Image 1: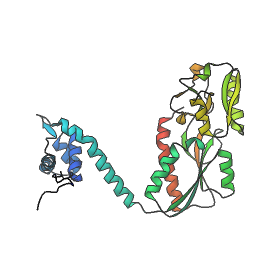
Image 2: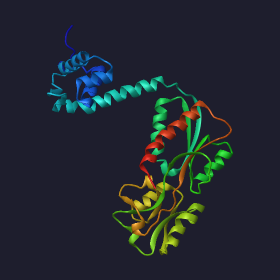
Image 3: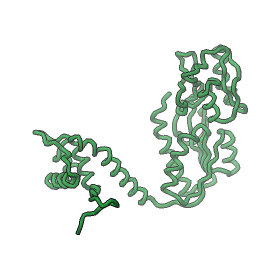
Length: 302
């Protein structure tokens, strides 16, 4: 049997076997063939043979043998990130194929604040695993979302609970803070140019009141009902803006107590469910939202 050649007629190097890559990673992580064998549940000679096969197939030594254990060669260090990516993708593919495909509709509501962060991550992962599910998304403020749930227009709703009285599963706590542009530094102007929501009791009762309580002279410099527009306003130097800490845009920073600005609120982010019923598709989406918010919950602290 002849060599495998590419379209240019040159011999092709066969890609390394995934099982060999797993042994390679085990040896690299433990620094010892013996420890790697224990981790993999194989004999030391079997792991040594796999490492030799991998080195032979690549034509490169991957480990330097030391008096105690082994160390990666420069080529071995170069292989490390590729080996991790390959094995991780294979594990992800196996998981996706083991998961039972879901079908049916799912109607989910989420605050506009997360439409550019958490939502795309959740939906893309969900769509890859369950392409037969028909997902409908509604981006809106918390009160309209609760009304939509009361009228049976959505199945799941991610809402803010700034009064700590709402029912639901807590996904994270994401404080709302005043943000300013690092370049434009609107917070140094007097009166303060502030961005506010046009039709929001929360903005009046929390954001605007926080400025009044600090005795800061301010004026309305930008009005909208869209969190994306708020981020645009602060980024472009039009105003300071009340923004969820996790969604402060690039080039902007939180105004802290050291700047004379307190945290506006410490809202809980809740997942609410329609009490009229559920389905496997709805439960699958709830799980995906929970997974998507987990990094945020770990990163954002009051």
